[in-house]
Length: 137
Image 1 (cartoon, one colour):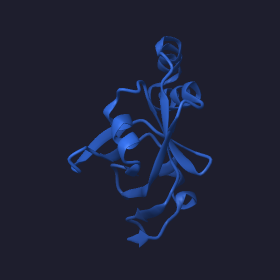
Image 2 (cartoon, one colour):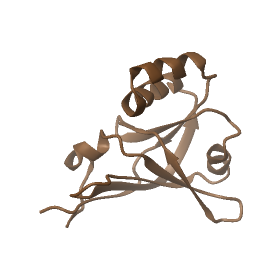
Image 3 (cartoon, one colour):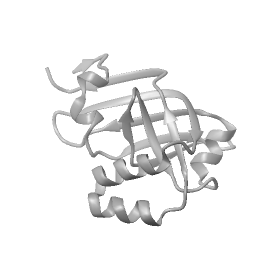
Image 4 (spheres, one colour):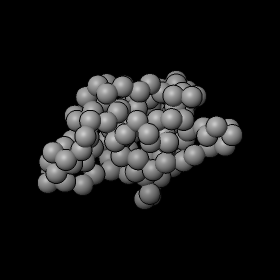
């Protein structure tokens, strides 16, 4: 197994269509794991959320420490995990929504989502502590 890999070492993971998992902290300090659509862009992950009332947003506003992981589901297994402080903004919500919807569900779904969703929020995760791996030589 190769370890210590960065995003440039894992292009098929970083630009693939595997669902990511976002870990946030509940008020009782237990962890909530959320499957999410995501994009790797400008050195960080963007995850769209459709409402301020989403639990992920409430958790991050209270405690911005998060972990995010994306890993493929076929051999050779590869993945990238980041522990970092997340930020929340409305910047480029429709851009993130469009790009991820198109990548994960196709152009028709992207157009439908962009035309029907109210403005939402973007969770931004820029690598703090990161680890990448690949089960290949």
